[in-house]
Length: 157
Image (cartoon, rainbow, N blue to C red; front, side, top):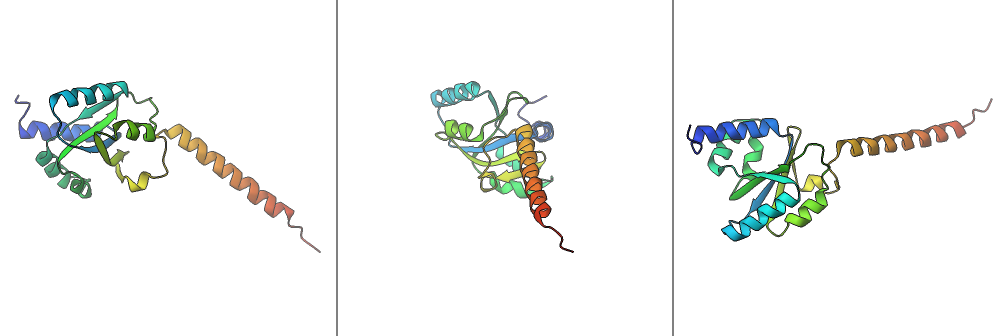
């Protein structure tokens, strides 16, 4: 099988979208070999993998899928970057800070939805357990305050 054929690249891209719940889409300038090896070493230190799809096959594949609105983000040299380990908690700010010199974040695919950078402004960590715990703390605090406010009201007879 020809690994560079168009049909193989399309199949590989479809499997990548199906199997990976979380990955980042980054734009980058084309770099020479020495700079690219430094970037690969930096990605290894951060425990991240990358996938470089072909632009035309990516756009064609996305136009015929659920992610039809997502194809406008693909222009130029793009990379899909994801974590090596599913259990690793990702600190979004540290990843962006370490990759800022060579890449610019365009969007994030999380659980079959694609989020832009503006939608991720207040998000610091990508940990489901921590975010659910914070949600429970907020709900608990809100319920306690509403209970105290309603309990203070005395019904006069």
